[in-house]
Image 1 (cartoon, rainbow, N blue to C red):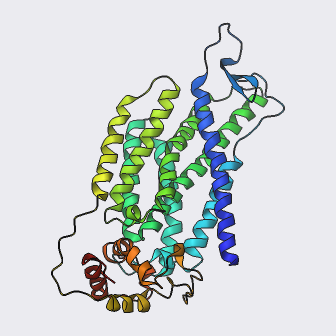
Image 2: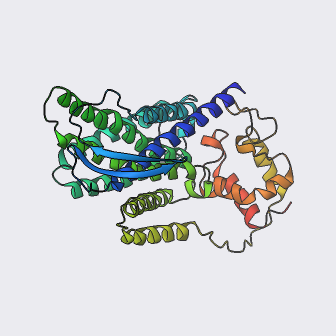
Image 3: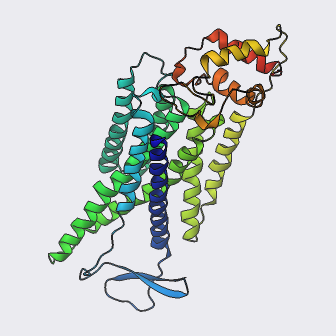
Amino acid sequence: MLDQWLHYAIRLFHLIAGIMWIGTSFYFVWLDGSFQALSEKKEGVEGETYMVHGGFFYRVEKQRPLVMPKILHWFKYEALLTWVSGIFLLGLVYWARGGLALMGVAPFRMTQLSAIGISIGSLVVSWAVYDLLWKFVGPRAPKVALAVSLVLLVSMIHSYAKLFPGRAAFIHVGAMLGTIMVANVWMRILPNQRRMIAASLAGQEPDWAKGAAAKQRSLHNSYITIPVLITMLSNHFSFVFDHQRKDLILAALCVVGACVRHLMITAEKKQTAYWALGPIVLSLSYVVFLTIPTTIPPDHTPPVAFAEVNAILVQRCHSCHSSTPTDDVFRAPPNGVTFDAPDSVHALAPRIRLRVVEAGTMPFANKTNMTPAEREIVRRWIDQGARL
């Protein structure tokens, strides 16, 4: 029970920190696009905007300050706390159990230790590749860097989907993007801003190109935000993360997320990019097409008795999915799903077919060694109407 409360507490902390980070990110992107030129020029001021909130009016100026203010507010710990709590969650769910939740679908023999190594190493390597790309290619050819970034993202989605079970694959894509975001903040955006401040305090002209580079990384973070949220939310819907083409679904949803964010940003600037509706509609249509349930042809094979299926469930599934689990990891039935009562098994038949037959991701990491023949028996019983 203690580990469940720990999981609950860290997940809640992660959610709150993420809301704070996303909120400030969205706000500053909006703020940067809202400034209007001054009616009368004022030295060091590039624009101003007016806001109203809580009964008061606020005037905000966009400055290249001639003198550094004594108190300067930074927005950085929201990003760090979101990432740290997310890594704790990743470790709690996928590393603390010896990498068991990462096993079961790789096309080659992979040990639990190597699965954890791939999980951690991919986060580090992804940031390094992204950073080198945008450090050396991005400033000279941003469109080329963008195209390469998209190809690499799709490649990583496909690789994660091939190596890890669906839920793990989706959350690792989110963790990879989140790692890039927080590294952008702490390793590129903040250092550039500090260098500019140091130059100003030394009486030198700041290198405003560093500010532009920081702004570019900040904009990247803003576009990445919705795809990260998509990976987190999709993790609760097995028809998405357990689909046979989950990699294509996630890639299409990332396109939707980035285009929606582009619509938001351009609309805030009164320059709405309506062309982004095209990729959104096409990608969503493709996802819907992929996830439409297929018509199951009539099964004319000999009827399968529920008793035969129940015997398989008792042997292969009850160690986790019962009111009194005996599994060494799960002390409570995952997601509250139990197969103790026949009516419960009947009600869950479509979900059982998806996880056990189509995706093959249950039993968890196939710890109980369910055979292909047993999966076929379960399929036939469900396709024949899941009669009790």
